[in-house]
Image 1: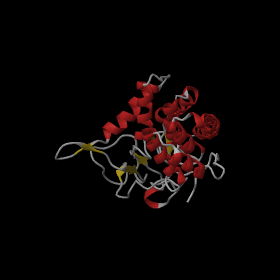
Image 2 (image 1 turned 90 degrees about the vertical axis):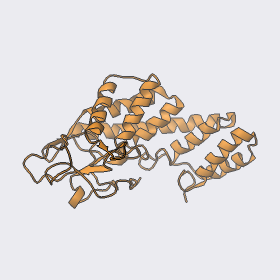
Image 3 (image 1 turned 60 degrees about the vertical axis):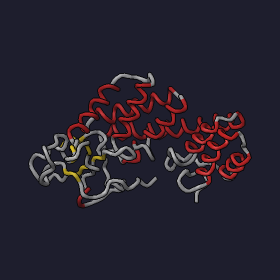
Image 4 (image 1 turned 180 degrees about the vertical axis):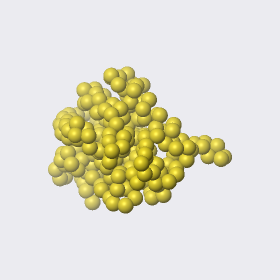
Length: 268
């Protein structure tokens, strides 16, 4: 159990008690939960922190509390979160400049920069949010080349579990999910725009992502629309054209909807 992890530790209890306290006005349990959560140092390691773990998670909890007693701690945690994101953005832009595909954990909602951007939007940290949005614009508008073929900039180098694989996912995959795929960055770009946070290329990025989602939309017989959990491809043919989906997944020379689950969370 990790004290500053919203998934497995006292941090989750603290968040619950903060919400209850705001309703009841009794902060006794909330203070005790906050003390347990901060009984050990809060991690600010860029490699292991995310929206649910470490300084960003604790900052989110204290912001939710909305209590003046946590104002100073929240200011410090916010500064640490900005530093974490600055470090991760630098690494992401270096990766982009080299033309390498990302891991899911670089950009996704749960572990990556989309999640940090959501925090900054929630906290109204405009400058840091702008830096994340600029990164997402690059992610969605700058395609990559994998084994000689063009793929979207968010095409992961890894399999659905965010590990480098051989076989089915040897050339990576495209993930359409909200938690780990392109829907997360699209949602943040759209929500930021609605809140008045705009910048050059933002609409182009939204259009590019929406085009991919529209291309792979699969209507249900009973109504509604769904999408493959992920797409993978194996370049065994002469023209895989991984960015141009066929009417239906077919053969090994085109992007294919994978039968493998794409819901496995990336390791931190």
